[in-house]
Image 1 (tube, rainbow, N blue to C red):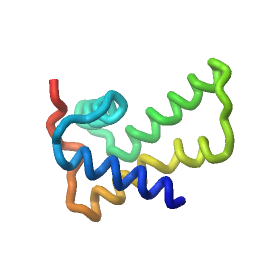
Image 2: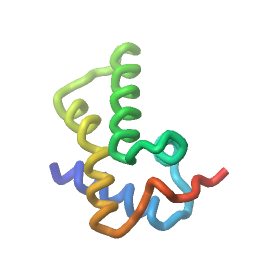
Image 3: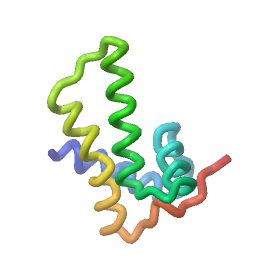
Image 4: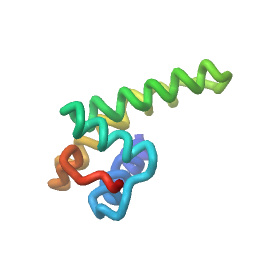
Length: 94
C-alpha cells in the first residue's frame, strides 16, 4: 500500500512539474485528453493491457501486480486532485 501511494505521489509530482512525461505517462495523458477519459480510467486500461501482454509473453503475474494495475490510476487521480493538479488537461510535449 505504501509503495502504491509513493508511486502515485511520484507520478503526480513529476507530471505536475511539466518537465516532460515518460512514454507510459505521455500515452496516458495523450489518450486521456484525446478521448475525454479520466486519468484514472486511462491509466488503469493501459496497466491492464500491459499486464495481459506481459502474461502472454510469459511474465509472472501475482496478486500484487494485479492490485497495482487496477489501483494506480485511481491513486494518481486522487493524489492529483488533492494536490490541485489537473493532469487530464496538461500539454503533452511533442
